[in-house]
Every structure is written in structure tokens, then in C-alpha cells.
View 1 (tube, rainbow, N blue to C red):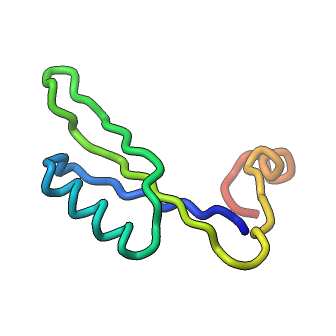
View 2: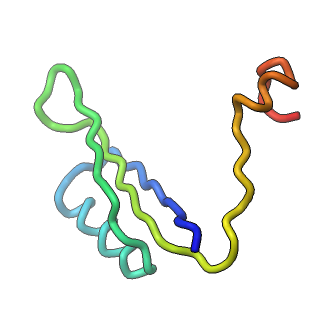
Length: 80
């Protein structure tokens, strides 16, 4: 089964906010993968947090497309 990722970005890094995000998404069947904090230079408190979840999905994995492959045929632009 292919592994799917979900990333939640929040600028409210309080314990209540992070707890709400964790409880909401685990209740939906997602499993916590990681929490990454973005720090401010002038403060010890994080400016934002990225909460990453995963879950397995039924069915075949979608085809992989690589931007480096398309850049050689489209001149480096987005989309084809």
C-alpha cells in the first residue's frame, strides 16, 4: 500500500494548538510522523510548526513524476 503524507502548518505553536492538531488528525486515521519547528532569530519561541502525518492508502501507488525530468523538455518551467 502506498504511503500518503499530510503536512499541517501552524503559526500558533502553543501546546493547546498542537494538541488540537494532533488529536484532530489522528482521529481521522493519520499517524504522527514528525513535528518541525521554525525558529525566530531574536526569540527562543518558535515562529511556526510543521506537523507531518502519514497513512497507508489502498490501491496502487500513483506514478512518480520528477520535476528534473520535465525541466529538460520544457525549458525548466512549471507544467508542460
